[in-house]
Length: 466
Image (cartoon, rainbow, N blue to C red):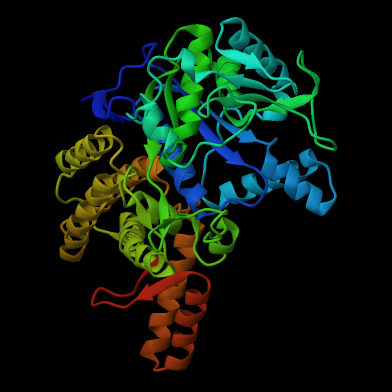
């Protein structure tokens, strides 16, 4: 089996063949750090976190970079409002980013380059773009990329230049030779943060930072470039132009873009004021529920956001978590001997891998988990599953969870809790025998408060974590 990826560049699913066998160089566009991240950012973060996890699960050596744009008009304006330095503001929100990423169960990238720390590489690339004939310097010391020098601008969006010009996303600027030209270096305005360059004091344009960072840290070509589909134009289109103007090589072999999170049909964004901060949502929903909510839809599809949908996701996930914890309890309390589960386990693994190999289809992968839950719930109820078999299923779910991150961990204690619970269950049975129901109920209730549920059955009481 091979992984296939829907490549934005070609519009087709393609077999994944990295530039170097067994290794993957991956760059994902991060956030502009002028405010806390919202749930729209969370979707992209969880999508690409899961993709990296799966590539590693399949044996690839992945180098994963995600950048911070920490120099930008929005950052400068917000810092001016607060009366602080722009980099002080961005540093605050970078700290918040990592706090919020932890609330989403995000594994850290291998490196987080920042625009402010990559100025030599950025300036060098701007110089090379000018030297190659693709850039020009204006009277005020800004530098623009000339799209007239490019023959196939628009290959990522599959649009013609005239269509882009009429899209409403082209910024008019008297310094430009062509309205489609874009700034790769901006001359400094009075009071703005700036760096010295051959063209005077200034700062980088938005697009150039990613091209320079990729080239500096990952080389001329990478395997996967990712981000939200709102970045396809102009950001990723312009990255392609900048890099290829200098290297003459394709920037990325595969381009991947997640669909937008929408609120009442509109993209969730700070500029529209329809966003929900991760830290606020995380006060009510844990990382497992949030991840399940996003991963239960294919990453390329748009996704509606509402608290009702998050609540539905939480309730659906509870069915899987109950099965997971039941299996965890059963592997300690179930019968010895029983059906051989090795073939079934291998089939579930094959189905999970087949789902994820098909363009990281987490929705189909989650359906495999529901199928497993239905089967094992029935086997546990009928006592045809052995405790050894339950342990094998728990190990399989742990394996899948290293990719999805939707199950809470089953604590691997030293057996002390088992012994304590056995004593409490025996004590409670004795109390019920003596008709001291108030005390037996007190044990049950206090255990419930501690996160342990007692369930009475014909075979005696059973317990599990909740």
